[in-house]
Length: 161
Image (cartoon, rainbow, N blue to C red):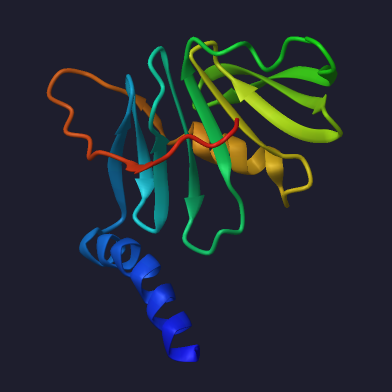
């Protein structure tokens, strides 16, 4: 049983470790109209089966946090709706760009949200330095220009967002 578990773990980790080993510093990973200029040891995932919008997540290999991202025709997470309420909201600056930041409470879950009107990033509020992590991911964002060579993200079946 231990051997099976070890092989299973290696099957999961080896593609990510191989990618990280081939990469030096950062790499551009394309999702929709943008690329994440992500450190090599980060995993960028886009979920399948979305027709009018893109969604996924980005996380380091140690899984210490996971930031979900949304681009396209998604409802604005920093808008009260149904049982969702905005606990606080303010403006944050990331590399000279203004982003709306807020704490959202929904279905007994509290999440920090960072949005620039095109892209929404969210993370559980109990994550260590949650706002700092969101700003770090926001700083990785690069909108695609002609000639940009962004690698495709990993793909997964759609999870509930």
